Image 1 (cartoon, rainbow, N blue to C red):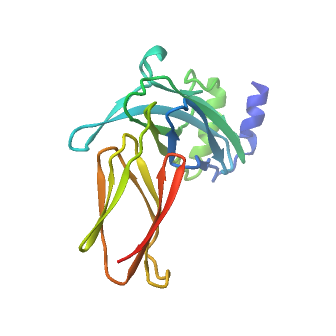
Image 2: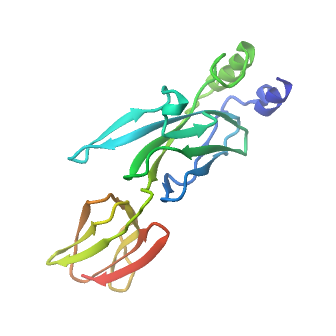
Length: 241
C-alpha cells in the first residue's frame, strides 16, 4: 500500500483540498461497426479522486419519456454495456482511463447514461484502502469545505446497419429538421445571427433521435447555420430567414 499512500499524498493534503474532475465530451457515439472506446477522466484538483463509474440504459416510451434501467447490479454476462474498471483512483493533475465495451444487440439504436461520481472511500468498497487510509483521506476532505462534483455522459449505440436520411423543411415562420433514418443525428454549432453573421445568440447543440424532428422559429433578417452530423459525415447548412 506504500505506492497508494504516495499517490494520495495524504500527509500533505490541505484543508481546502478537493478533486476536480473533467470527463471531456458529455456525449459518446458508437457507430454501427464500433464496440469499444476509452473514456478519459482528468483530475485538476489538489488531491486524488476516488471515482465510481455507473452505467444505466435509457429506454424511451412512445411519448419520448425515459426510464433509467441500472446495469451495475446485473451479472456481467447480462450487461449490454460494461465500464471497466468500475472504480478508479485519479491522481492529482493526472488521468485515468475507463474502457467501454458494448456487446448487446445492434438491431435498433440504444442509449446509455454513464456517471462518474467522486466519493469518499470506505473499506471494502473496491478501492483497496484499509480503514486507516480511508479515514486519513476523509478527514482531510472534511477539514475544509469540499464539494465532490460528479459528471454524466450519454452514449448512443447505433444499429449495425445504420441509415441516415435527414430533411430540412422550410415553412412560413419556421423550419423543421426531420430524422427519417434509424440513428440519431446531431445539429452542432447551431447559430442564430443577424445578416452580418454577428450578434448571435449563444450556439447550441441538438440531438434528433430516429423518427423525430425539431422545429425552430425562422425570423426575417436572421441568418441560421449549423453543422449536420450524420455519423462521420458532416454537412454545413446555412440559410436566411
